[in-house]
Image 1 (cartoon, rainbow, N blue to C red):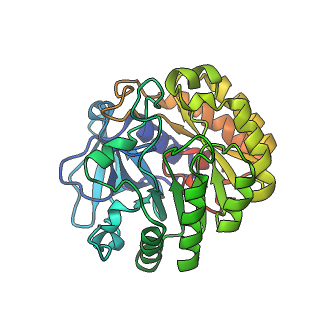
Image 2 (cartoon, rainbow, N blue to C red):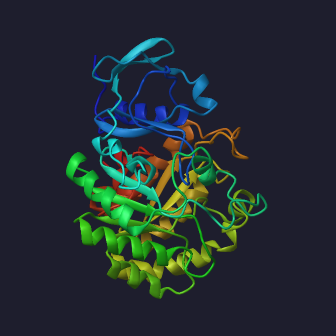
Length: 369
């Protein structure tokens, strides 16, 4: 039994449903997983419907999902069940080879950067944020400190370490792009300086497309500096569509208003190019489908790719018991958004690097087809 491809209606529905409900797995599934961190987490990587995607497995909601995976065989292949009925097969990719290496001073490469999706390398350069320690200012969904406390990463990845790991990931595992994000270290450049330094070192070591991600710096001149340092695309993540939801869910980050983001997008697009500036929108935080689509329309008109993903509550955060969006909610957003992107001729496949190109955290790319 096989699963239909993502380009079909049944394949698209399957991935959307899996990412909304999550997946029940056994203890010994192996493969690639992510807990904690600065972005969507508590996932495991699977290949299904012809695409490698991130599916929630460590959330409370996933424990009650109608989807279950049978114990994988020696090749990492499992039967996928829905309400006890077999609906196809899924595959748990093996850990990449670069995970087995360490730096000269003994730091495992996987503590410096992780594989996301099929072939995207990702890292949080600064695993700290000026807002995280105070719940009055922190983003309620963020777990940037959890992986650090659990010794799954290090607080700061030097440019030399990032370059070393990136080169190995390309040579050993065929990584095709890399994402550099950061906790916000200050309210001036908001991490742009450390990202530029990191990008410059990586580009000197290996020819690898890079996306850098930070809040809008006060000085928009940083966009040109980031481009000159080697960044191929830029992510500035709104997270929520309306200012009211942003102020409720991320009170510190919301002090940089939606309007300030729009001004920053307008400055960045001429430098990086149409479609090469992206923003992450977490569906299910309180915005209606109409709110998200209205913002997406504005973003697309500016040349910004709106990467909409289902919100996944992470254990240990204030929103750990927040109900994720239903599959129906996601389809009500992704189907019209896919049409909008098609009509604007703005495709995830044209993004040089970053979350939109990877696409593993959302089935949006299937709705572009």
